[in-house]
Image 1 (tube, rainbow, N blue to C red):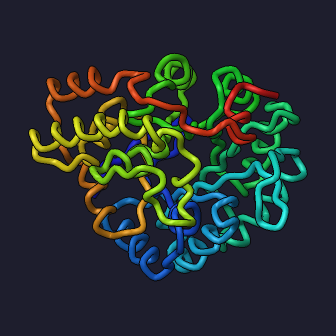
Image 2: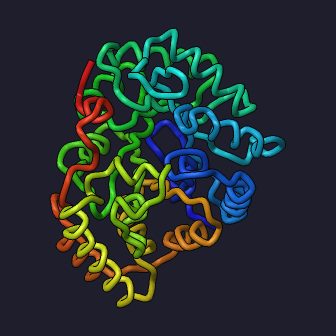
Amino acid sequence: MLPTRRLGTQGLKVPAMGLGCMGMSYAYGPSDDKESVRVLERALELGCNFFDTAEVYGPFENERLLGRWLKGRRDKAVIATKFGFRFDNGAVTGADSRPSHIREVVDASLARLGTDYIDLLYQHRVDPEVPIEEVAGTVGDLVREGKVRYFGLSEAGERTIRRAHAVHPVSALQSEYSLWHREIETSILPCLRELGVGLVPFAPLGRGFLTGTARRAEDFPEGDSRRTSDPRLQGENFQANRRLAETLADYARQVGVTPAQLALAWLLSQGDDIVPIPGTRRVSRLEENLAAAHARIDAAMLRALDTQFSAGATTGPRYKETAMMALLADRA
């Protein structure tokens, strides 16, 4: 079974690793709900009961998948979902965190998930048109109404986190953090620790790049977002970053674990307030990832990883210059 950790100072306890469910219904090609259900079942057996979803995954299909699976076992799961987008014919057309929209999304998510409460509700991206104080206040009202238990932010900057936290306590920030993306260590992570906010790293394996199966963007099949969305996988960036992946694989062989396990073990060693959510659609990968919680990596190896994978070692930006990228900074 997995050890538990606390996200924030408000009382949310979760296993040391959660399961990112996005890829079961979104971004990585055709879905296989039967296999996804097997992954969910096995996760629960292994003590991984912290499941991360969002309305945008599908859109809506991932929440529906979890809702079907959750019947009869809601009390055994900790569910995180997210709001914050506007849709037109299933495509994201911008941000929308107006208080009235937040309430509409929460009610719709509750219906899809087949539950009357959400354990952890994130604002998926900062909305430049809505003051974060209004967002935090609205979620705070939902907490008092019993529809939500804890409030989270995703990809928010330091100023936004502080402003939101002053209105209603933020329990967790979800942001990209891994051996090949460490930029949050400069100001975001110290801010979280000052305020008592937990960190939930998504893409802790670099969208699969750190697993030992690195592929350039054009080698992914049609329908896989990695073909176009991540400049780090393209052209000369890929060549430079592949050397990092090869270094990780060499280190993993030295200590007798897989590259994925070493990357996750390093992340877990960065603090007891960190709960990564690697995603997968295969039981074998799930078991491999969760085993990292029991890996024992000595201090010398951790120092070597810190040196080889220092902030800025990765080549290329993590997103193209799109509307999504524009939502990553401190706004509103």
